[in-house]
Amino acid sequence: MIVRILLVEDDPSIAVSLVDSLHASGFQVVQCATGVSALVAALAPGEFDLVLLDLGLPDMDGRDVCRVLRSTSRVPIIMLTARGDEFDRVLGLELGADDYVTKPFSFRELVARIRAVVRRTEVQTPVSHPDTDITSGRLEPVSAPERLSVDQRTRRAHLDGVEIQLTAKEFDLLAFLAADPGAVRTRTDILEHVWDANWFGPTKTVDAHVAALRKKLGDPRWVEAVRGVGFRLEEPS
Ligand code: CA
Image 1 (cartoon, protein in one colour):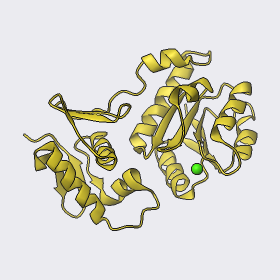
Image 2 (cartoon, helix red, strand yellow):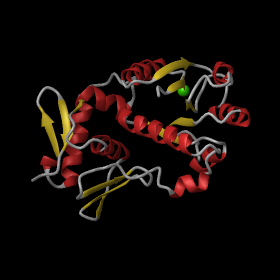
Image 3 (cartoon, helix red, strand yellow):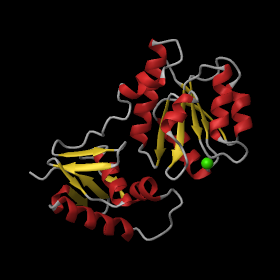
């Protein structure tokens, strides 16, 4: 089954690449940039299998879009929130969102959430219950190498059971690399996901944070530089 997604996102720098990536992953995507157009599109019955809903829209609060949508439709909703948004995950789930991801997120993580939500709604027809969803562990720690655990929910990282004290950006960087251990992340990827899609600053910022992260991990080999490409996370052997 081809999953048809309505992407409600007003930031073109995010929307364009997200639409491309979702297409490339085999999804059908329609994008709109306002809450009103989202409601018009989403309320047409049976049009979409899932709504990706940005919280900060120009004309409406994403929460209100969610509430209105949920009052008339059972279409699964994943909210896209930005760090710093005043968003309470329990409130979000009470509004009827099925899940949410915080920007910056990895595309891989988003696709995993989409598939999980679609699978859940295929199995259970009734609207999902927030309580069971929370305890079923939708926010599992990312699959980092065994010695390293990175918990995005609590934003804490442990190495060999000992917590590593990280700054917010160091944590984001580690979480991004740890989301796909061994995979090479380019500087551009890192800048887009950890900083901002509109970042135009020097890419040396990445190197500085990598250096700090290596120091805190106690072994530079944790973050391997791939010459001319970027970095990957690998457990030192
Ligand atoms: Ca926005």
